[in-house]
Amino acid sequence: MRHFRNEEPWKSAYWSRVTQRRLSRRVLLKVGAFGTAGLAGAAYLGCGDGEEKKGVTPTAGKTVAPEGTPKPGGSVTVLMGAPFSTMDSAFHSTNADKYCIYNVYEPLTAPDTDEEMKQYSVPFLAEKWEQVDDKTINFQLRRNAKFHDGTDVDSAAVKAYYDMVLKPETASPRLADMVSLDHVESPDASTVTMFLKRVDGGFLGAIGRWAGAMRSPTAVAKWGNDYQNHPVGAGAFMFKRQEPGVLYEFERNPDYWQGPSYLDGYKCRVIPDKAVAAAALKAGEIDYAAGGDLDTADLGAFQKDADFDVVIAGAGNLGTIWVNKKREPGNNIHLRKAISYAIDRDEFVQKYGGLAFITPGPLPKYSLYETPDEPDPEYSPEKAKEELKAAGYQDGLTINLVAVNDPILQADTELLAAQLGKVGISVKTEFVPATQAGLTLNKGEYDFAYGAWPVESAGDIDYAMTQLYHSKGFFNNGTTSDPEIDTLVDSVQPLGPNERADVYRHVMKIVVENAYMVYVVGMPQINVIRKNVRGYIPMNKPHGFGLEKQFRGIWLA
Image (cartoon, rainbow, N blue to C red; front, side, top):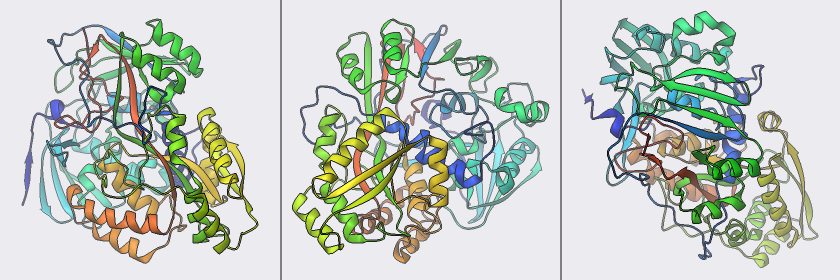
């Protein structure tokens, strides 16, 4: 039996409803990936002084302004381009929601990375665990962890959370993270036993991010359907108040099990207008902004501003053309290859001032599973026309493309349409709200769709491989149905995250060779941070798997 014990968890650990009505489980899942959470990442590009034709080289991760001794006190205001869809950890589905989820709630385990960027899980709300057998895990909970309402983080609370998520009728997006979990038992107050349906080497990582963000059962019972406006977790910050859609305020949890955070609290200010948002940041009204909430034209200016750090780290999102291969014309491999050959990805890199990068496929460069030896996709209008002829469309054709009605995505699809038009492929684009996009994908009522997939960690790669490319994946609906891919993806279940890389690289080769999806451009995570905000740790940093929207280690100079 393997035993895992605490290893300085908070210094090293990583850590709805789309509308007011509940959608089906699949719709919620798809909105979370193809909708706001995924597509907002298309703005993570920026417009700087990049001269490199092939795009930016993100850092492996750095801590902003690490010098000095951390001191308590003060508050930061963070920018949100959209309000929370919910503050309930079991239902969150958008990028904006993470500003609450990553700070109010905490999971049992947390991923970390070593000097070689290999991942492993460390204890969090569970101080240790024991692998009883391949499909049974006993967790021992911390005795000093409490929810913000003073109730204990005990096994009954953990079981209540997982029991709720595992019920299909709950329609929780988190169910997709727990496909290998069968049930949970609580033999005593401090012991949680999880029983898996199958051997799954990625399970500890899957529950160590947003999927396992524990809620207070007492608060859930008290507030009922309005719990999403009264979140109670065990994290470093507590919800204080809100002006719905305008401002959300959080305060330090004085009884946090790892000791109080440095900040007294933080505020989330909603400014949808990117020009107004940039002005507020410049004026000192905002201290922290994710690149996706700013206009790409403003990011270069902040890079030159001595009052700010602009951190470009790792692979944030991968811009992708999703293809419905269940029907014409997406079921034609020659057409899919023609589309790929017709895309001038250098032009996309230059469009974003050099702050994007070309990447070969579903394992992007600068991610934990990058494939540095894999060649970039080839741009060849001549080959595109040859493939188009082989597809039976020598006289050209019109394809239908769905995208979320975001200005940045509109610019992207306009460029795509212009490039494809040069080889005889006309593009008819339908821009829809994120919720409608999720419904459209769920029903398979599309030919092509432009979106992005977050790749902030190895956990996202696991998620993508099982949910996007496996024939039974939640986000696939059988549009990719390749027995070899299914066999390969199934084979990694017993493997740990670091052993999965070679298998996934094989999967990527199959996906790229068959153009099951068409990959356009890679997008780093970009954050603009005022100089006096210190201790920020981006993702993909050795010994500190940080989150771009997590604030427990931040302090003010």
